[in-house]
Length: 437
Image 1 (spheres, rainbow, N blue to C red):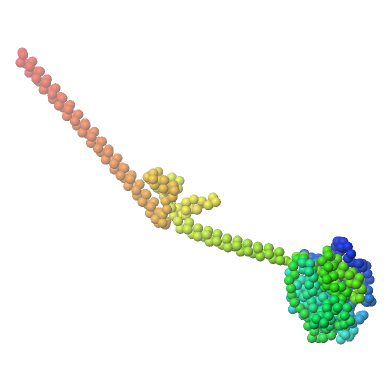
Image 2: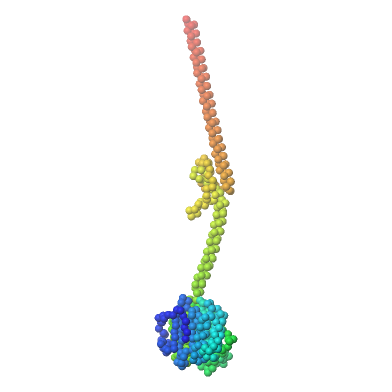
């Protein structure tokens, strides 16, 4: 027996359903059981010598994600040697991924090694074995198969046999000459039409299929399939809570039915097929792609906005004076959307009130030069206004001075006239006085 696995565990098993596992399988001589699990799958296996044979020629391999069952043929010190060589070679040559072509090549390499061993005196001439191997990678399963060991998949409570027996009775079933139940008890049921160890040109059946969360894969030697029907295999597989319990119950059922052959069962449950994780990753990629598009659009919009802002110019208030700004007046999230490019000595208070109001809102200009020209025109307007005001003031002063001069001259003339009149009156009075005397 070979059972290779780095994770070996003995979990607490749920109780069997009533009426199951009539014959105890624990503690039997020539029996072997291994179980384990990881984040993707859990498994359990049991191999038993049966109730008739004196030794166990079956071998099984648990090297996750690879699982193999091999039924040896050739008698004591032969069948078990062939099956042991087969599982060891398949374990060494199996691919790292669910590639059924390479897995089939590993089975064919095992055939060559079994033949070579017999030629070199290892085991016995004519020894051989079957091989049924699966390699599970998330939701993909590669299968390679030779002989009458079997692989089943229990999907949504329905058992499906996915391998085809390379046996004489299977050919009779295919031809419609006997039924599947009759094949289990047919006198020629032990005749194998294809096996490892006899034909150097032997080829393995190989294919791939999809498995999903909740699927249960069952590998078994013909010590199970020849003892109980597929319907009973389905019933036991459905009612068993764990892979190890399923393997134990199936072996127990084969023993209860007579245990005429070695019986080996490997059960693997798919716990996580990776589809949910893949869906999350796809969603994350879509979100990232969408976010990238949004970010790109925002970036493009930002660049366009910045380009637009950088191309805008306006005149505005810079403290008490007029300033030339590049951009658009205002701010975004507290960041100003304009920058002061040019200052001037033009005081806002020197400009008309209407223009002052416009400057508070920002007066758009076509470019920097236009802005500087506008500021220069403001300078000129203010200078002209000041010159005009000075001229008006000067004119007003001149007129005031002339008026004052005129008024002074008139007063002097009036005083002279009054003096003359006084002199005349005095002279007249004097004359009158002289005449009287």
